[in-house]
Length: 90
Image (cartoon, rainbow, N blue to C red; front, top):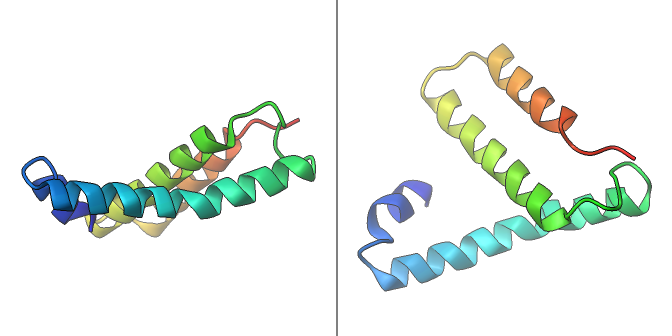
């Protein structure tokens, strides 16, 4: 979907709309989990769950892309660990 959206969304309003809907849906799960982690005291309650969800989704999609491009699993794990380390703790 990401490749198609990147190439077609700027030229096709239907693709742009569906891509936006899909991205919104994909943000739901991490936002929900971040909110739960905030309620449990694992992530700073003052942090914006929407922004953190977008960050994590972007990192996951980026890891997917660079993994397919050939980065080794250890580097991918280090990227994930770094992304989790920047989450604001209480």
